[in-house]
Image (cartoon, rainbow, N blue to C red; front, side, top):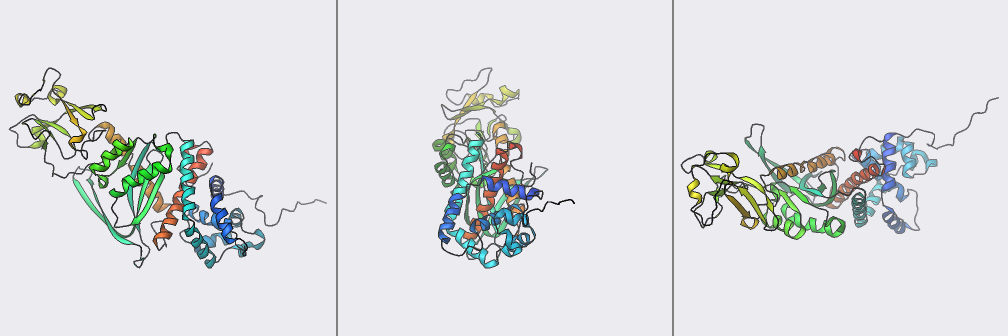
Length: 441
């Protein structure tokens, strides 16, 4: 007579784990959440434990990993997925009766709101862990503000905000778009190479972006001293175009600002030295030009961009060379160069040095019109991809969150999951997949 082995009742060890379960397991393995769980257990000590707090915490993370837009959707998943219930830590003997009702989730979220600082510590620990695993993590950063719409117009913490987008279309024609929304604004700093968050804040939608730049950088360096000598560049759009901020980033933090410059003069050229008659001018965005034809009415033909020759750190100056000598252009205004004292004009052509102090908003250590700036500024698109994941993967395009505290908690958990997933991939020796939120090895 054959004897059939009887598998353990309510055990999922004999069942092949799904990719989603593996993703959640790997996330839970790397999260430094022991202090949070200890604090929650201490608060509940001596009370009934029908729904273990560690199981609720894991299930809440599962909702984010699996893309559930609401706790009701999560409960439906828990009711039909025994693997998930067991991984989270719910009693397998209770079956689907172990699924927590709505009032349990309400109380648990209230507990988490009181422990927001401990959740922030998990986020900071994951940032630090990535810094240990990836020596160049945090070298190039990008910052931006993201619109987060409110679920209800009755949200008492939300406000109305708008953002002005300016750029060029495929034909090079200027375009302008104004986005308006009612809700919140996420201020986010990400690593521009790995597309991962390193710091964030949440404010009302009406709050401006630029005033948060320096405080966030200072807080980041205070919380992560290892970043002090690591950060090299910070990219941002024109919304952060402020001369004082750019100067402080470079002078006090040794960070090169890759921040786009607004045209505040309607395209009008300005004399580099207004005290003397000269041929050297600069555009509203910092392009240094020589007026090669004094009788040409069209600025595009009258001015020629000088050849940029680099930044001189010892002098804090940008160095430029005569365009006629550098590019072989015809100059009809060469004699005017000699009107300026101490001008030496040989075969090499005139050399002009522009101090950053001429205008700290316009003149940057990495010249706005140099190839290096353009290549570095392209990395700013990393934050747009992170924002896209926040919307599409973590469900903020359509959410059911009301109130600033709950919104910050939910955002923090989403970014925490993003970092934890990246840590898991790097520790698996597969850093090329650290942005993969779906597939597993």
